[in-house]
Length: 276
Ligand SMILES: NC(=O)c1ccc[n+]([C@@H]2O[C@H](COP(=O)([O-])OP(=O)(O)OC[C@H]3O[C@@H](n4cnc5c(N)ncnc54)[C@H](OP(=O)(O)O)[C@@H]3O)[C@@H](O)[C@H]2O)c1
Image (cartoon, rainbow, N blue to C red; front, side, top):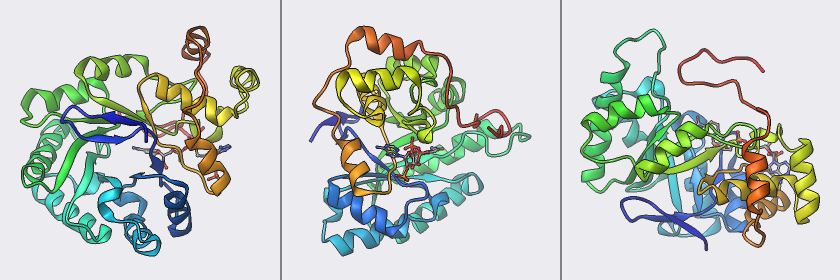
């Protein structure tokens, strides 16, 4: 299995399964198709399905990586400890592999968000020191949000997750986290399907004899970014995992990197959601 190695030495699979809006059946299928990293969040309401899926498939907990996130309303030191303990109960597990702060500014009008992020981080550091979390992460943190954590943290983040796909690569944030040695993860690596019909993605799909989804996923991998594709059918799950046998050449990588903006979700950590 292809892996990425985090800055604390933890090796994780190079492709994870995104579980937003995925139910028990999808998670069971994803396990059967070979996914061993699951990206969930307390907000998704399906942590318990991952636990159930492991029981149903007989796959051992320690063979799988589970990442979850602290939701906006659960931030702060005590709240985070409480939310994490609920996550563990849902997962039926003694530990989580990765825990992230889901959004850096839970309330855009709250001028104290920096203090709230640090309190949340402090609780995560405590759980990390107790061996309850294997790696800590930031989700939807722009570099300036992350700087606040770096200014005071004792445990460095290992993972930074944000929207990343052809047409929306957030190049500045990507380069920033690369320089810091933090593993970037791509949420919506196919722009939730919005980029699959793009003319360049279609052209490259023909050129490399792969599907448009595979171009998007392979693009992430070659950027050193871990994609978290979500799919519902076993065929698509398999297709999305089968991205290691071809290479997008440098010229085509740069064409994707420089294609016009496309497929943005409308979500930005410092703005109200834009309806697309
Ligand atoms: N941290 C955050 O704030 C955040 C935000 C958003 C997402 N995420 C994470 O990132 C994961 C992935 O993002 P996402 O679910 O938004 O979008 P995505 O993975 O880019 O796209 C999923 C969509 O693409 C379709 N699809 C999957 N494989 C396909 C294929 N081979 N060919 C054609 N269509 C295909 C799926 O359809 P079917 O399901 O019908 O197969 C689904 O509609 C989420 O599940 C979640 O874990 C995190």
